View 1 (tube, rainbow, N blue to C red):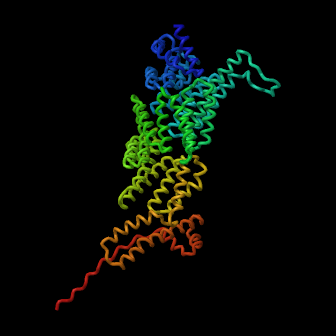
View 2 (cartoon, one colour):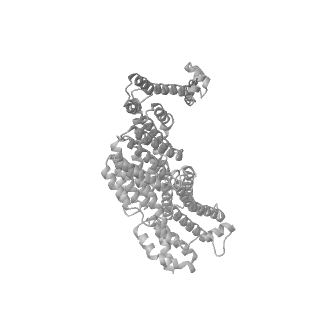
View 3 (cartoon, rainbow, N blue to C red):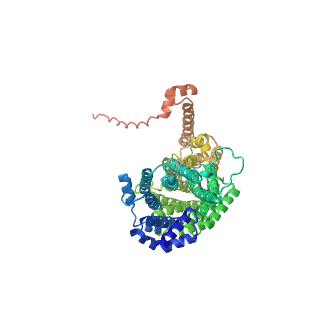
Length: 594
């Protein structure tokens, strides 16, 4: 028994020192069944054993085994402690602390299974238990740090980024407080006249405390805050946090998060790169390949292949992009339907963009539609829980595919509905991610392209102006900046400011259909004037009125005075009356019968 518990304590210490090597995993697998039998004889060792096994399996990506190792644990003892507000029989503060960590392991299982509400409830119980134990106890700083970190992960996945930032910042704060509390002998109360040398015991204690701080703060910076800032498009902040976090993690044996951090740095560089910045895209690719080598035996290799496929798309290498996405499909989890479905959704979005790149527009739309289906609940108009980001990206990919499909449509009457459906897809995505400036910018710029295809330069200019006036300074993504430049060039290349070349081309095709079979040249000359020039004049009128109203804060009378027209003219343009129905023909009078 003593040898069994001493081995458990040794492996627990390896976890604390971030020594995540194969020996740790092998010993945990070897002793798991023996530690299970401690439940009847040693409650403390049993709870500690369940936590060590679950945390080890989770770290090495064996999520199903982590969940199974906790199958006999329901956390009822900690729930009873919180409910009663006092120790339950047979419990001691050290045992209650171990039960808190066990409860966190249960919350981690919920997080992996995407049961985020259940995870939050368990973490709430952990926080309440800490407060009841002794909120001022310095020995609980590490526990508070871990609770806040797991909560930040959960909130991040739910898309609650502001709250996630707050939790992750708290995690870093508590990790720093633990470091300070465990190294009080290193405090400086006055300017040092000479270098302070630690005793041997002090140096050992300092190194251990620094290692724990490096793990906690490094993960919080890189895997938490850096990830969120990158998702929101704050690339400079993300890169800074990822570099700082990686520098700390590099001092530890945490190989998994070090490799993942390098992968995220590659993602940030890819996002920063403009379409013509080939060197930066290759640098991003090299970082991702390095990370992929480090993640080769872990489920996170799926993410590495997925991100690499996207950098190959940016480089115009469809063959390599397909190869990486096929590899990602091979790595899909087979015994975890929720994670498998989420990754299938992300993969289909990338497949849609690969097909669009090689001009297989029908297949591009098909893949995007499948992604929307996977990310939606019963109502395709809203994402299912945990799929918000994928749902938004799928809508954008669908809009992109529809715009591309409209360019190869044979007839004008079939092109317009495709472009209008694309506008609708971008509107859906923008509505669901209104707080994300990157998504708002992408949707607005794609919508501007769509308006150009419909012949409305005015609407396109309004969309591009929204980017230029307010969004540009909040979005650092190079591909978004390239998209904005492309839209601006398309606007500038139009023959006139108010109607585009697409407008004239589509109008010409429609007019040719009307003209077919008509032999009266006078009638057709009048029709041509009405068909081309009256609508263009109406667009000009509306554009000038919109600009005047904007300058005069929406006041019709002031706008009318600026333009030199009567206010009724502006109201008539803004609110046109529906055309009157033609009066019924009067019956011709019949001559009276004599």
